[in-house]
Image 1 (tube, rainbow, N blue to C red):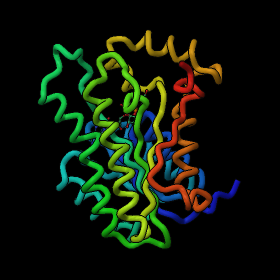
Image 2 (cartoon, rainbow, N blue to C red):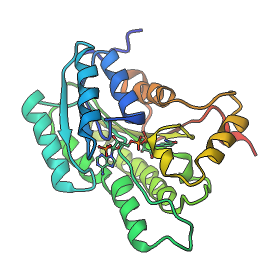
Image 3 (cartoon, rainbow, N blue to C red):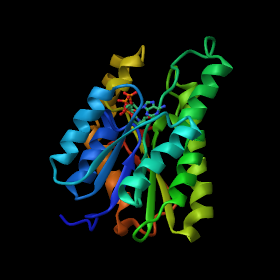
Length: 252
Ligand SMILES: NC(=O)c1ccc[n+]([C@@H]2O[C@H](COP(=O)([O-])OP(=O)(O)OC[C@H]3O[C@@H](n4cnc5c(N)ncnc54)[C@H](OP(=O)(O)O)[C@@H]3O)[C@@H](O)[C@H]2O)c1
């Protein structure tokens, strides 16, 4: 399949493992150079870089906290000096505190908001400053918790709702500047992130039982839709949140 992505350059935040890694490897499979961002797990990030390079495209390791605007500026600066431009950014890195309403503090709430929503601002601004060959595409990774109530998910859910709103506002404002922005909202995927959920087994069991498509969602399922949004075939999709959940959220 030729998606006409060959030769483009991409940054995927939080791509050392999980869904971000699947997105990065898929982009590489379509001939895209990919910069791998991580925060703490250098070894896994280096493994992903090696896998990308093994696919015959360029890869770059860019460590940094997306919640720190200076780190974001450095990440984009490194990419600019190495590659001279960028066509694709996938804002995937996320974190958050999973606590009941009684335990959750404003500090926890701010933490999730900062990493999962506010970080999109410096990322978008830095992306705007780089050269590109043609249109730029930015895809943010969201979750069903933006619009549905999931136990212990108040802070992360609210941050993802803010993220989806930012995607709409930024998309409307920046389309005239050649930047196309969308989000992909995923159902439950069994990554390391789920290890932090006190109710991990219940979430997976509910997803297995209730998903009309009959199986659990994989990182690759999410990556496939992200990739599509990065292509010129999606050139008139602006400011949307596309749900990838095997039909889970359409059930009453
Ligand atoms: N798993 C799910 O069920 C699910 C469902 C819906 C949506 N999502 C969304 O999908 C995305 C990826 O989730 P995942 O499950 O793949 O997560 P994950 O396995 O926990 O991986 C998180 C990645 O983000 C990086 N990261 C964390 N905080 C960072 C920061 N402040 N700055 C830079 N990098 C940071 C991590 O790097 P280090 O290891 O180096 O810290 C890692 O590469 C997130 O946006 C998440 O909300 C996940």
